[in-house]
Length: 394
Image (cartoon, rainbow, N blue to C red; front, side, top):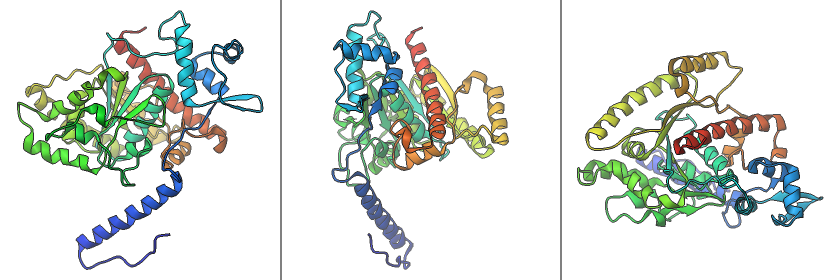
């Protein structure tokens, strides 16, 4: 345990520094205990019914392809029941795709004439569930067989931590900042890191990313405008991915605006409270003004989708449901049909830096787990459908 001593109170600067040092030490101790001995996150196994559902086949079909030897048996068989690693699911997709008559049946990756999907989640209201929504979408889509890149534009690095990289524990690798900085940027391929979750990679973040805000105010000019830097970095690895999810910081600065200039679609997560709705109105007023400025400076903004997503939805809370109905009446199909429920299952998972897809169902109240997962599945299904529409798929 870290010894607890009285905090310094002589100068505010000393107090702030000491609080920071004590918090960082405690965080490192907690994370090292949570992820010891090698500080590496791992992913749970998936039961056969889950795998059949992910692949869009029946349990009988899975038993058949195992009996025929088409798909190898998983390495984990307990009491005669098969349990698959995420990598084994990924490998099974490739095997089944090769023998399928319908291209994309098991591996739904984009073709060369289908443009890379870049979805930015943004709102400057803290607590709107941007990072939580981003990681759940990333995990859902990776499990569905897509090659997903997440770009963490928040210097706090919450999404980076949820992807198994802990900026709090002396992480000194390259970050998205290194790919977009003005002084000798590195190639994006050097920044992107494969995660423990098959199909999911990340361009991580840490506090140094906040320097981009200051540097852009000084170095951005018509020859190298700030709003092209994220788009250009992503273009360097475009061929490796089907879609990119961009998690924005809770502010409307250079990072968020550069993300908007790179995006092909936008999602604004919104909790159904009057304060959040009012804050979001202000955010979009400013965003619209800034969009106009960068368009006048040469940015080409064109979005396939511009959607609101209701998050932390409580079906039994009448005032919040009235606000949700108000938003749907006002903006109609601009508000996604699916909502992300407010759930103790999701809250408990995110406290452990996990998504609901990483949690073992038996470790929670099953009804609570099923409601939470069903909610995030519905959000994922709707986003996947919009991605297919952008690609011109039926």
